[in-house]
Image (cartoon, rainbow, N blue to C red; front, side, top):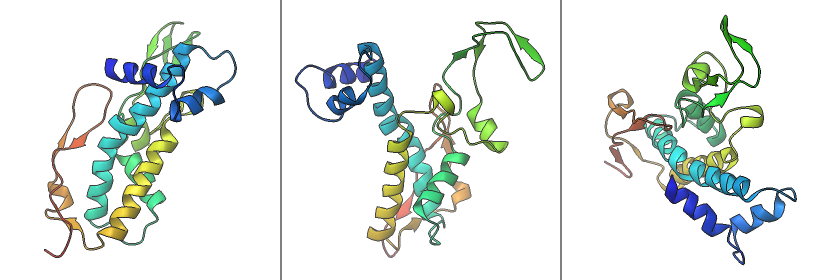
Length: 190
């Protein structure tokens, strides 16, 4: 995380050009340096840590049979719903007393949303919602759609070498969701 913070700070330095400079030019006047660093961090985080885990599942679903012409956007949405990049939200704190699931939480109480569980129950919280919607969601979805389109076009015969059900997952501690431990695949005629 410290490395991401350093990258954000360097990218937002005076005289720099690129995505960070463009972001700095588009945020409202008076936006704090802290907020700019946080926005850069979330873009970097979404562009690598969370997307990398989901990319493995997108590839596995695609190579395991989801090559039936399902639009890339629909495939990505389905995989994100089943395998959210982060199974839990970041910590939030109640600003006033609230009742959740019949339990009264006083103001200031920590709240952690089970994104994976909410999605399984029919919600669509893979990237959060409302004011807590992930700033990198559009970038992550774009990266995943491009992955599907390129694989379909450049490797039309690619497939998994094992049944999808035999793929193993690891659940590392922390903010990120499950990851496949391997994706044995054949890219051409096998």
